[in-house]
Image: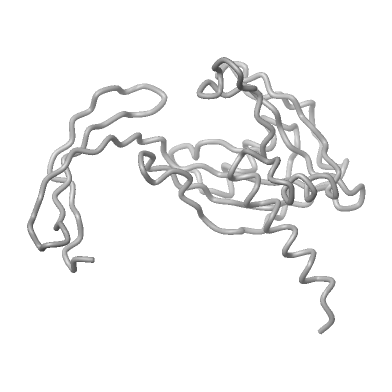
Length: 198
């Protein structure tokens, strides 16, 4: 790799809506040390928070199911089972965003959360970084039925999945949503480490 970092020298916005779609002109060194310019598509989606909520006493993970437009095509199920997630609003911290989304989508007013990390879900085109959390909840955290923000066209179903079933789905490769798979596997590792003798 060259010591000179690639840099964006020009940007043309093609579309501005929920996301911004840019064509960026990138200047970078090729393997022979020659400076070259290339165009790349960049979708600016903002940063997001994701929280996997678990009711440890009852042994359930609380997930959401909603349709996702890119999955609407013949032969594909557009309804994705996933951990609660949403874009971080201006002025919000990732933690505040995770709490707001949990209350909007699932009706849960969560307290303490554990930060798992930050992931880049699709670095080939998206600027998005996802801040991942795990929160333990109980029935006392339920404030309303959830369902999402109707002004954003959300129609979210809350799905309780036994933790054992969630872990089995992760082992069998049946969790399609990357953020949910990462959080489920992280939780599996935590549980495994907790059972190891000191």
